[in-house]
Image (cartoon, rainbow, N blue to C red; front, side, top):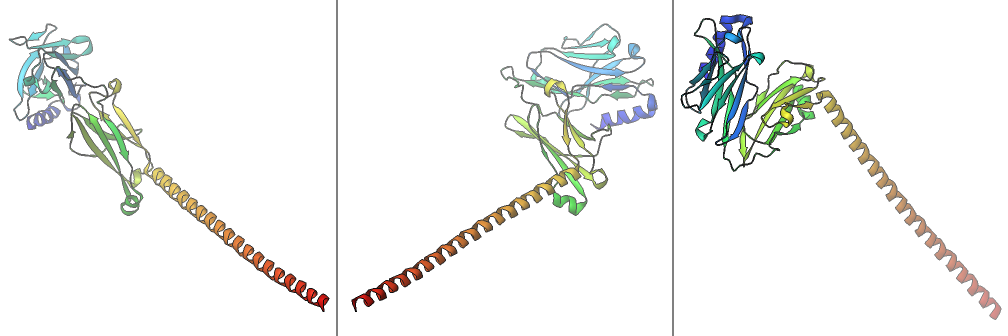
Amino acid sequence: MPLLGAVVFFSFWDFGLAQPKLEQPEISISRAKDKSVHISCKVSSSTFNTDYIHWYRQKPDQSIEHLIYVFSTAPAHSKNNKLEATKIFHSSTSILKINSLEKEDEAVYFCAFWTISGWIKIFAEGTKLIVISPDRSLDSEIYPKPTIFLPSVAEIKLHKAGTHLCLLEKFFPDVIKVYWKEKNSNTLLESQQGITMKTNDTYMKYSWLTVTEKSMATEHKCIVKHENNKRGVDQEIIFPPVKKGVAAINTAMKACVEDTNDTLQLQLTNTSAYYTYLLLLLKSLVYFAIISFRLFRRTAVCGHGKSS
């Protein structure tokens, strides 16, 4: 949405570091048709009580459109009472209520703040509204299920870097935000995002982070924001230090080799013992045959002497 990008950029110029901040905590909300929904907007402004808070929406492949604004404690309504906007002074929050939801109400809804100049607006990131059919039950287990993939030893040795990959599956709706940080840092790291793909009635997405050599001893975390996360808390998926992972792999490989050597040695020992036993048995049979032959001849000689 180029319009929003331009608005945000100019708002920085207008206010500098003292600019108000707007935050919509929900990245998406799913509601059944014919129900109502509340979309909230937290406004960090020292003049919130006298600020005009506006609400906009943008449907897919359409331009953004203005819906309603609210100024005082009295709620503002649209002509057909489809929309209602309110301000809650003690929490510096504005609420947009949409009644009797229809499929046509699906869109991304934005709250906005007008600057002192009166023509520049600051927008929040927006909340996507998904309207589902009344007969569809939203399973409680449709949060993102993570699977992690650690760097390979070959990649680390060849490129002096490693790739952490976070695969997220079987979630609904498709709105999801994934970002990366070092475990004990609040700084967002530059990562890569795959597209969100539909699989049957749910979605999947993957994201990956390239860890440089200087950061290999640090734990990293993949943070997942989604409407259906358990208890409404962002998931934090911990990735161990690359060096520790490599050490564990090397130890496992060494143990595997040692186990193989021990097994081979045991096999050779058993084989040697087997053949030694056969050899001793064969020698015993030979000795037995020789002794038997000599005793037989001695008996025969003695017999001939007596008869003569």
